[in-house]
Image (cartoon, rainbow, N blue to C red; front, side, top):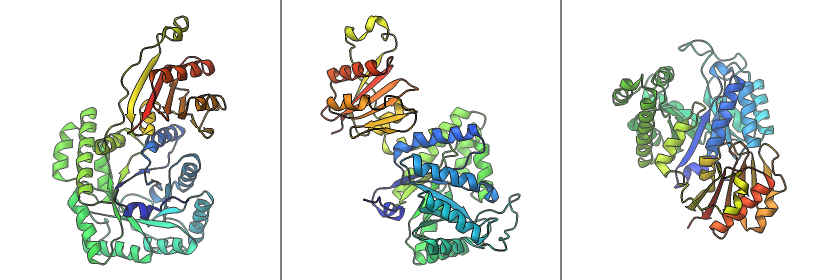
Length: 417
């Protein structure tokens, strides 16, 4: 059974969440990106998007990262595609690469020209001039879901808000099914954009962009480049904290949470987070909106025969999370670097081939639904189908010690009611 399309998800009653990343420029940056991707994966976003760099400078890296997300994660990647510095033949080639990699969702953009901000737009002599042209090209090339960009405060090159709305309407007319806005800090600018499109006869979903502020200088610079204004009320809250990083981060998360709540109350179909390839602030906003991860609490007594001469006594921590609604949230909380998952039906390795074929059968005998082993954190997380009591936890610990050795944490989850 195929999963719902992005437009279907955006049209559903429940609000969606989605995340934007940009291609890394170094090995260290790539490690940081994949750490963020893995931490955000348990949220089960509607999609994640991967941008082009300025002037289309990161096209190859964009394609590589997007394909890897499609192949190595449970996420649905939406690839960015721009008209910048590309002929139609080159665009067709990139689209073919995406299709071959299993990517069928594309955000079609004109893109920013190479050079400094404000450089006049000049199309490739054998390329396309507008995003609407790119939408038509994608529509002609196969079964792609196509989204486009929208600008609550208008695109810097648009004469006024009405002219900018006309541009978005033409993108929808060309075949775009939804739009994602540039990040904004004002609810009214989003609702007015939506109303302008409705007045033109277009009810396509428009997803507002959201950026939790962690650096005042960074967001000020990005707002300047994108033509987005920082409201005076936001500046008044952030500017005094410019030299206090932790306080500014906390206030930035609070501002983003308040904005997100207001946008959802106004009927926004979802929220698109500009993550800057980091996960912490985005996860904080998400948890503020939907509730925190299950508490890991209620320590259990360790039987003396498990101490094994004191070998594990100093490091052993067993906790029992009652009525956990989402095992992935607990996994994210305790085991950020999961290397292997063991569903009852078999084994799916995400990284190191640790415990392959050993733990699944043993836990199956205990009616355990899922086991996650994290080699880096020395933790085991498991869920019982029929309730996880203390004896089951101890049985699980025995199995882990037999096959793994020294274990620091075992978390047993009882299915939520």
